[in-house]
Image 1 (cartoon, rainbow, N blue to C red):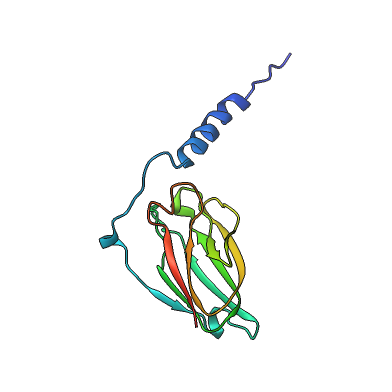
Image 2 (cartoon, helix red, strand yellow):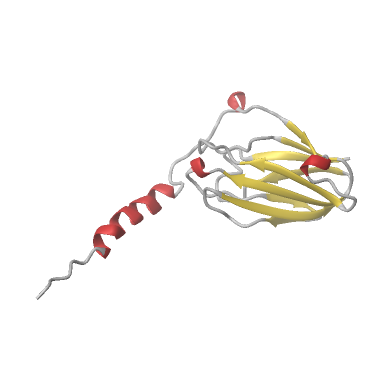
Length: 148
């Protein structure tokens, strides 16, 4: 009679360890002096259309609580879409959100290797975008969007 070996408990341990390691239990605050400020303007190559613009940014690939850019610019009012990539190397979940029109508009919280998107109809002005995951905005994951 052959004997079956149960592999499930052996395989579950690394999966649980990986899930726990991915939780953001420690502070990843970064100082303002180490954050580089970049400006990205929407153009035809980044998705500007007659009805709006698509602006792309990314979470820090090293897991620090900051975006790849701290300032974004849309060329004109209309539907503005922010597309935030969470790099596979980030190691923690992130999302994109924007304070606008009297409320917070939030994209999905995504794990490493995935993308969070939010679309808002914006008028000319200055808005704040941020990561809505608890503690991330306070840790420095915030930027300014200017609509011309």
